Length: 112
Length: 109
Picture 1 (tube, each protein chain N blue to C red):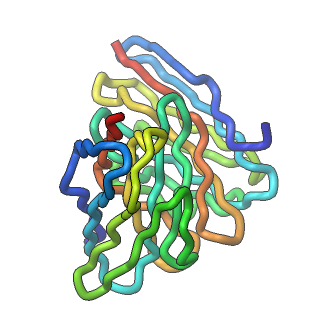
Picture 2: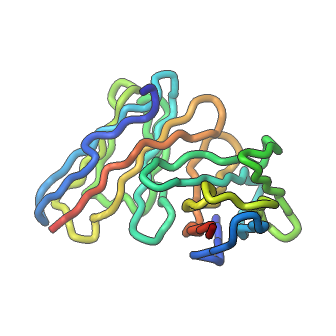
């Protein structure tokens, strides 16, 4: 499968713990996006990379959230000191020259 | 402010009937408009984009700048069209997508 992949697919954690998610984009895509989706809502933008540069961050991305894309390939999203309000589906997408974004299957986070 | 509004959370029609999923947007400038679809147990995927002016799976959408709308239409619904549909916009070039809340479409046999 050469699509966008995300790991893990599900994560259950206790409040206050740190979690890290990984996204592997389509190999030739230089743009990578993170979104968050809560129940009954559409995805909301979190942050965006072009190659290894983080070009935009949403106000939704509090200082407990950090994202990296160290070599311009895969990306990680870390949430420190998780809160129950962080429970959501975290989606990754990638795009090439066009503005067509391809989405991964998502990581479902549950904070107890 | 960038905003996408899908007024219907749920839409149910009978097989063979016409379908219209509404989408209105607000954006200062010339946005790109998209429809994404999520079938049961599948990932979000692009259905169509306004700049392509294409018909995918019998669906079309016309950008109406005067009414700031991008409604999705299909003349004859099929059961396999049952899914969650999201309207989205982005600025020109490769930028973030702003999504609506989504409409769950159910096609009854």
